[in-house]
Image 1 (cartoon, rainbow, N blue to C red):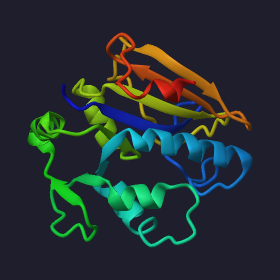
Image 2: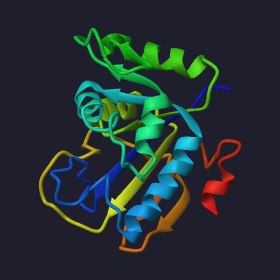
Image 3: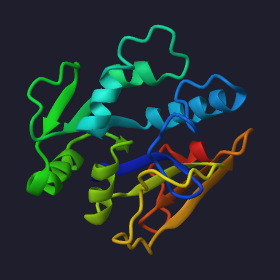
Image 4: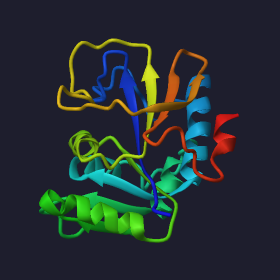
Length: 201
């Protein structure tokens, strides 16, 4: 069975995923932040591939690997997971466990090759342009949207007029202390991979 491709995004009520620092803090240690970190760790346990574009890769490489006080589990996960960065120009990723994909016309074939290998979920986060392209190609098996109760009125959005996603099935909705809501959708009628049912409890 092919590995699934999952997109995880933090998103505002008006569909913005670009974070200007005013509505989403990945290091938040509030009660809600700890709740979100716990569910993120559960999701991470079901994946062994992390897919990003060049900009998000550079941002994460410059922030997470050397953190020694991280309580979210993100640093540990990113340091050990297989990382795939899509870039036409990157030569030395300088992060152990990273493979460079060239993308462009080869993107679909490169992703299918990853999916055909043994392993669990491949998860993409951030990387707006890459996420949009994979949605356009119809290659996304699950969407995980952490919806924040804010309207920012500006910034890049995940969905554009070019996206027609009519075959989504809601498999989970969960609310957190300060109003964030997790919505999980699949594109195959609600299939949940083996071992993932506990995430819905």
